[in-house]
Image (cartoon, rainbow over all chains, first blue to last red; front, side, top):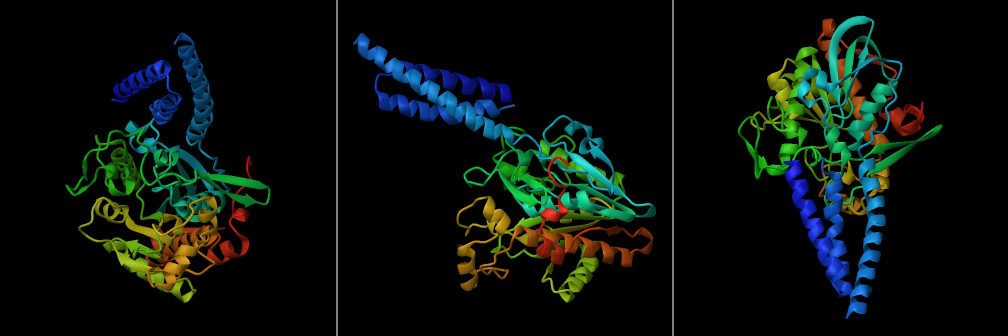
Length: 47
Length: 379
């Protein structure tokens, strides 16, 4: 189950990361970064 | 347009770098919670085994932890002392550590599990802003201890059920499936926490434990505080010990373990095994909902102005002055009650007595502080 969760989180992180890369407005980029923080931390914590 | 695009990608890159730096420090902090602060076995410790010895399916998981044996030369009974069932209840863990590092058993034996729910030590309660550690000064340096959570870490046991149905069919909130003191007597093939509970109950049976004591802390506004919760068979000993402690000046009450409240150590250890089951509670403001700033100083000093006000309003079940309830007092109370319970148990069971020496009590802890009874770091 952890691997499934890890994979879903990773896909989410990559999609948000890609959208942020393509985004032109700084404020929206900043929001995307803030969204990513807990998800990347969660990725690191999953065993 | 192309220039604008490039500009936005430079800011994206800068934000990614900033994120990487932030995550480096944040994850270092998180992962540091998985390193156990050392416990230095004292002169009384004769051997150390893993809890998984009693139920191997928890081996290699975060819920496996050390079990310390302190064995005397004279034959007698067996006492079990459990700390760290709820790692945010610091006095329970610390009292167990002080027993390991100081106690010498003359008769019988004492088994100590200082980090009963090891997984729960690896994180803190979400949204409660709890500190990760607190420290105590010893004569030669500072010892750092971990402040964990009431529940096992979800990275070890996930997902929670919507409703947790305990081994007796009682329903609780889903997260209670990660609360060791709701999972007794455990399930052989259940959640990790249920298997941990099963391992502890197995230990009690296999080691023929006569008296088992679970150390906790509770909020000052909770009715079951500064008390001994006793299983039916342990009520006599608990009452006599409480009376003796009152004569000595330590206020303490006795609560019978409710017969229909299942999953708790004071109920299931007594129902499922031969042991006399007891649970000790002391009042800790860091546990309560009325507390102010929650930092390591609240854990060690036990001082909180909001609780002083609550006491004046008559909302608490324990006295609360500006002196608070410092950690040394809470640990001292646990040690005093532990020694008294063993003394009364020995008087009631001359053949199965357990005699422990070299342990500080409430007065010693208050006068000398706890640092004197903790081995200096890197001993």
